[in-house]
Length: 54
Image (cartoon, rainbow, N blue to C red; front, side, top):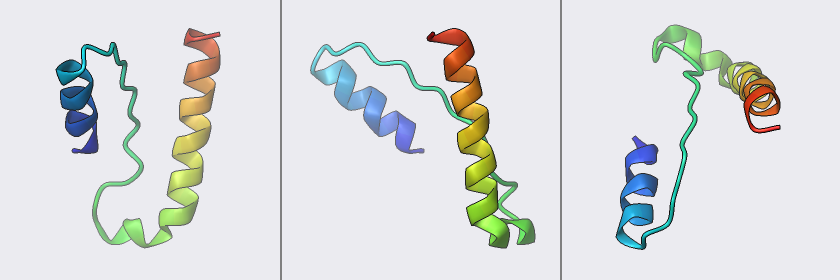
């Protein structure tokens, strides 16, 4: 959701942008463990960035 706003504004200003997202939860009752889910997502994105943007 937020990615669209970032991409839109970047396009309006002619700024290249690359968005990489990771789904942190299923938006169900498991989302109450949000802090640990976000930590897991951050680690997964960090590993992806290290491997692809290095």
